Image (cartoon, rainbow, N blue to C red; front, top):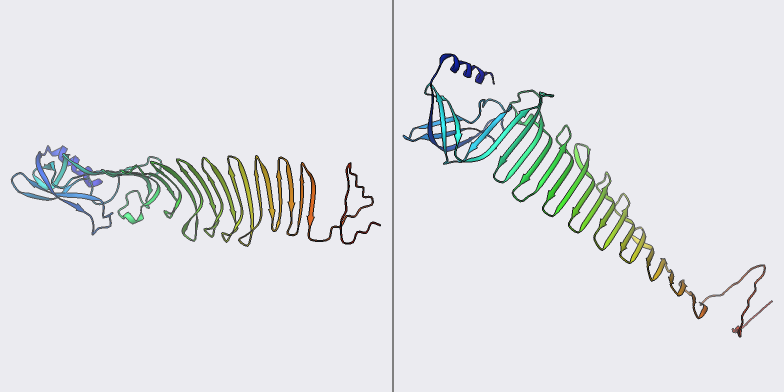
Length: 335
């Protein structure tokens, strides 16, 4: 900005005349062919009331680099006040605006001359970010990297991002009118991979842990009526799933993608299923069931029904009954 400093000193020392006049903005000059961000504008073309056209009127003190400063971009066809020094049009700049299309600014950090606070505002979006440069006055926008960034738009989306030294996102929090999502990433082979995802909605909370292969290992979902826990292996095959509702708890275990056991518990009964075997416990009944046998214990007594041989072994077996005891069979041997 040395040229601007010299210009101010020159105007002051020589008592030069400063003229201001009204003009219409006829062109916004974006730096498409330069090293700058093509969305940024540094000059405009204006037309005076007498029809004279003045080109490349400054919007910023220095237009030779992207160092700190504030730029106000007027709307095309809007009216502005333009100022010249001693009638020299090459020294013209816009001093006042009637309508603004976009506002940009870059402020240098006091603790680190290569760190800048950068913002951009228009009618639809707000971007606020911390950026780092190679030099204190960087002329190449491609060498400017994001450190942290805040974005807000007209649809009420609010986003906060943090980046590593290569501008890869490390953490992102996204707010919308009906949700909040936070993601933590790891950087592997110069690629950002999601490792933890927390999502909050009006009636749902979701937490996902993802491994280095981008496979979800642990997923928990909570709603007003149900909580579900799911565990998977490194290939994404489900190993265990537990569901909790207001009156029921159910756990399922899997092997090679197939169910091998299930346990269900509520205030009325408990059910355990292991392959072809099942146990059922309720307030007044216990039932154990295998593929070919059923044992039932309830208020009426004990019933054991089997399609196979029943064997009872022990040092001493004692059977007592207060009523009639009956043993039936094609062949009954008591030794």
